[in-house]
Image 1 (cartoon, one colour):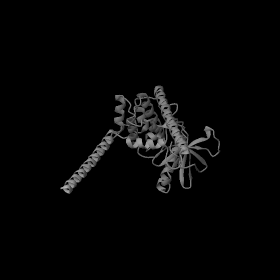
Image 2 (cartoon, one colour):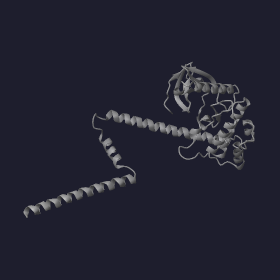
Image 3 (tube, helix red, strand yellow):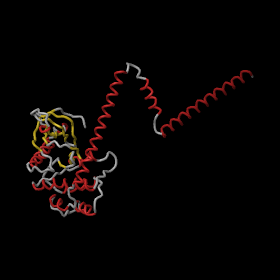
Amino acid sequence: MAKAELTGIGAWRLGESLGQGERAVVYRAQSPSGLASEAHERAVKVLHGVLAHDQAVVAAFAERAELHAHLTRLEHPAIVACHAVESAGGRPFSVLELVDGVSLDRLFPERGRAKFSLEAAGNLVATVLDALAAAANEKIVHGRLSANDVLVQSDGTVTVTGFGQRGDLRMDFLAVHRLAQSLGAPWTPEVDAWLDALVAERPPYKDARAARAAFPLAVEEAGRKALERAVKNRRRKDERLREQALAAAEEESAEEELEPEGEPPADKRAGRSRGRMAGSPGERREEAEAALRQARIVALSALAIVIVALAVAVFTNG
């Protein structure tokens, strides 16, 4: 996780950074009551400090948070709840439901294209549409939907955060299309046709409710299980990375304690020497050619000296 910029805001004590976007960062937070139980933990979304002096950005952040809080009263299972919108020192923040899961973008592979199964991808798109359809009932759109706003919980269920605004639903249609394409699923011809209709110049769907009704796939248990496995795999990788980072930090700390002042230990000197010798085959070839050229110059210089010396000797004796 990213290093936290803040340790607290308002009455909230902030912990690790859970994720961030262009305008805000989300922290794990402990409630003002000070109780450590899970029920009193929340996620706190805080506007970036560098943006807090821009009143237009501050107003837009607060407006989105208020609309998100308005949706919370629906208690829709696919929408992450927004419990409160507050401000501290002119810096707005919202208090959100803490979801036990990871954002969809972190389930994408580090390299290459994502490859979700049809069932898993179907669950993702269908649940996102459920959330958008519920918002449409309140005449609210998401407006900035991305994989960062889709949260996959530890049990494989899907929720959406980051609502909302009043405006053009086409933005959400285009976002859903991009999201579906990024999943790399083996979509059926029916889904491909649905996706094409979603981004047509004049989509046949009046709003997200109509688009959801036309989506050919349903939420399935197989898809939930597949997403549950993906979250577990991501967390295992994160744990290994944390352990490796911790081991490396402990090793470095131990070496610093043992290292005498002045000359570094022999193994470090040897390591640096090996590092200088190491490199790609191309780099090693260039180094060898440079060394050969240098040797030839030295040899020619020596030969020239010998010739001059002989000439001087002959001239002198003569």
